Image (cartoon, rainbow, N blue to C red; front, side, top):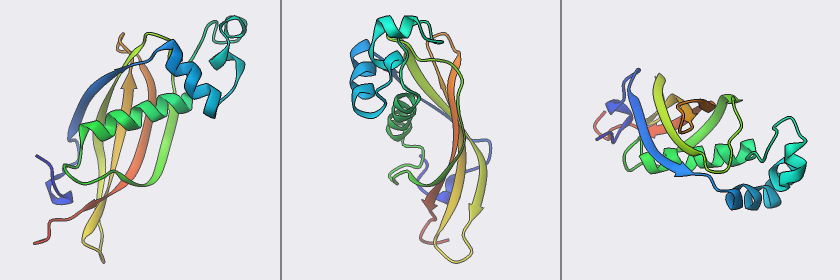
Length: 148
């Protein structure tokens, strides 16, 4: 089990659980955070470029965060983010889609002054058809082993 920055290696991969996206979830999130017609109204969504109801990209990102947290990629340590790079929405997420997350450690940088390091993990969210729908690469703080 990964517990410390010192346990991480570039190329390490993660595979997480799944989350189903429902019509009600899409509309509830959109009503509060992204109230655009193609997220709220099925008739309006049919006339949009999406040709049907689609989840907000921010909703998809929030689901990705939940899946990443549940995966516990850094053991007992929280996901303390410094930045997110390369956030890309690649395909619409629809009612009934089942999303899953996979990640790969792409960079590790130990701190020169603090008992921690930063890790960059490229995350990809896939739907049930193995189509990528979202990618993002956050930089997070991970504590070093106390004896390092």
